[in-house]
Amino acid sequence: MEKIKMTTPLVEMDGDEMTRILWQNIKDELLLPYIDLKTEYYDLGLPVREETKDQITTDAALANKKYGVAVKCATITPNAQRVQEYNLSKMWKSPNGTIRSILDGTVFRAPIMVNGINPVVKNWQQPITIARHAYGDVYKNVEFRVPGPGKAVLNYVSEDGNIQSNQTICDFEGAGVIQGLHNKDQSITSFAHACFQYALSTKQDLWFSTKDTISKIYDHNFKDIFYDIYARCYEQQFKELGLEFFYTLIDDAVARVIRSKGGFIWALKNYDGDVMSDMVSTAFGSLAMMTSVLVSPEGNFEYEAAHGTVTRHYYKYLKGEETSTNPVATIFAWSGALRKRGEMDGLADLMAFADKLEASVIETIESGIMTGDLVGLWEGEAPAQKVNSVDFLKAIRGKLEAKL
Image (cartoon, rainbow, N blue to C red; front, side):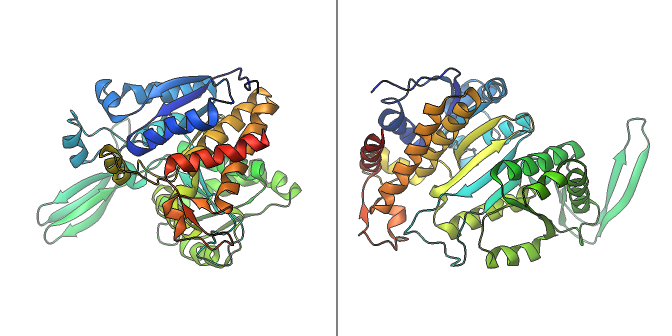
């Protein structure tokens, strides 16, 4: 068959460890035989980030702003052990955090549902999409280890030098810890717009939750900004589509989510979204079956898998051992980016290919062919057949070629 043409490149961000291996396997097996693939390539593997003093991450994010659509492989965020292992000059920041900051984006994570892999929460019938605010809170905190008795004070010094607030945080009688969090109205506003726009585009209800009864200024500011933007910009559009914007306290939201049938977007602050996205993905089946898309207020998109670099499997791979690593979320990152590129450029063939690729993945699993992580979750009629990653991709290719 003639390869599907692209007019504008995707920004391709390569990554680390086992997901880097799968990244190339997916391209070789499922993309390059069928698409005249155009990408602007950035290697975000840890060695190149070290070599470029992390400038490569900034360059990739700026390219995303230029071209509008990016697809990203999972990357290592180094801790002290990784600094030693990779002989790094410093503990480089999370690439995802850097990219989110440059794009001022919101992360939307949703599970991939397959017949035969049933959610732990039996009444969940549709995916629950987590919208995670991608700025501030504990991820940009300032911390201090209090050595002994003394007073901790919260001060704000304005540009003209005036000290405001001057509140006592704690009169310490002994050692302790202090943590300072912040957020910005501009970032919260961008978060709110992204959530409302994504809800309208996907035609899903939007839930938002914080703990404003306890955090009467910090969390309440999020609530106030969401309500103000909804009333001014989106209320009429929501009503015309029969959609609901719903706010409740986060503890009440957790109870409602568990009792729900799914099928909505749940918007959360940074830390809450980090935790709840893992809870939701695990309850739906596997983190390897969780998609992630970063959406900026300007309409830029970056697609990736929600999971990490699968280090344990990578060490097995280096020893020459066979691995059964699940590539589904990474495949869906590619298909999501290709579909969005096709949508932006008016390429119906590219959009149709993305749909057929995703359908081929689902059909392969539903036929009983799957990676090891899914075997223990399988409740389908066909007997589960565990295969290695390469054979899984080949099985998907067989389904895909039948559709093409």
